[in-house]
Image (tube, one colour):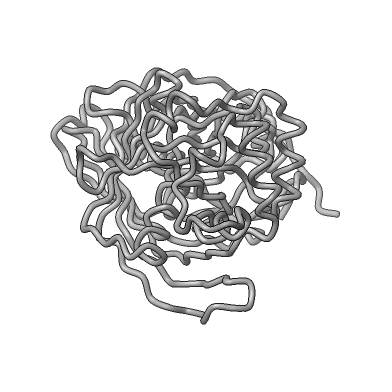
Length: 353
């Protein structure tokens, strides 16, 4: 086993909100831990557990592209988090051009770390994937270029989904916008509700109106029970309720109830909104140049997610379960606000050569 050496590392903690409304309100909180030294996974997890929301470790090596590692409040590392990536990309502006960045445009190319264990990890443990973000610092807008895949599957247990919606979200059969209105409710569910993913699977649930999304539906109040039924429901990582707005073209009102994030509702979820746009284009043939997703309204954190230039190409034919995989590319837009920053030192280990 390689020897380790202890040392103190300077870390800057930045609190930000991403996908804010145009006036700067709302948005999804993220904590950015920025350092020019590589932190062990053990310390990264400890920092993540100090947060109430998602966090990102921003490693800024001197001569290499920045490396992002994403975490849930539980300390669990995840493969990708759109709003955390956009917040960290915005923060990189300060390091590309120290001082006042107002009115300046930037391009940031960053890499994303593979999932690692909790031990001291040499650099070779990472196989990074590259992403590109463009930042308009005057308007505080980050535009994230995504090239990924879209995966969609049918719900294997429609009766369970109906039960979960009724018992945990106060959403009844008559609230759903069903593709068919037959005599078999399970068949109606199958034609309308789908598991969709560009990173982690969400279950898309269409409702008839914005009012049903924001006023009648409620966030789950029994987190352990809700997490278990989501596991039983094809291992979904949460429910994404949505309704198209009648008074605004290409616009939807949404709410996300995550299965095991440590909080009952998300004010803005970039990967879920992107999965919804992919579903709308592929399954429902709803094709727009721009998709606008409002989220967080019911929480008092009104947020706006914008997706543009969505292009999809078939990668794999539908299987017996109605599942399909497509290549997907798009631009994800979000307004970023920085709420505060503080620096501190932390003791960490580095792996021996």
